[in-house]
Length: 262
Image 1 (cartoon, rainbow, N blue to C red):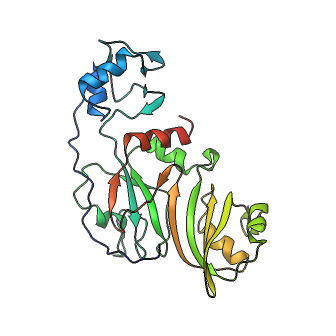
Image 2 (cartoon, helix red, strand yellow):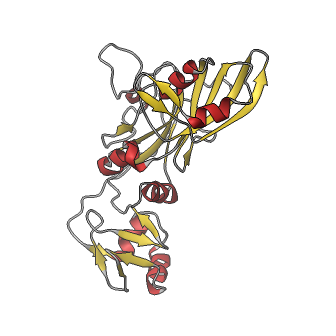
Image 3 (cartoon, rainbow, N blue to C red):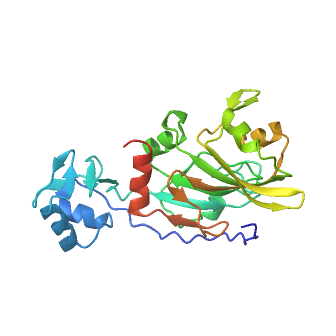
């Protein structure tokens, strides 16, 4: 896991052709444009009553406005507005979580260049010394819900901390640790590996206070020397290389909507 990856400035996200919508269109055309399948396959889904629009089972011949109508396919929310962008990024260590930095430091936007036409924003932050998964989008409603603590979207981190790790540490973190801005708890904790005087641990929590993971481990006497965020809700970092981005699939976007109760 702890291998160093290059920090390329290009990005592999395809350049979108953002359409200009003029109103409702044939539903099968809307579904096909959103990547559900060919128009014939989308017609079959509609015929088999697997598509709803604004809570009503769709029929062949229906029209929909991808910018305003709520569409579900096979019970999962479909973001049919293809002007909306959803990206996963592996933020390298040493990069600040801003789209541009007035101090001239390397920022997230330096890795996007002109490959993404729409203006996107990062969902939450990782401090400059941390690395791993960031989500980028221009969907303000979804971004707000993913960041708001009331929705409780879990985030998982792989940390290198000072050892040895006592068996009671997981129970202590789950019970709650008092910090300067109030108590904090973890949802899950496990020891991944031990490496002499250090250990690799995985921790999951659903709150996003500033430097919360580092402050938690500092408070229990096991400071973090390296931190990688490996997942945000249903989205996983996987083998995405440092500095690279990828577009989320329809299924991943639907899973994010489900994670925030939509």
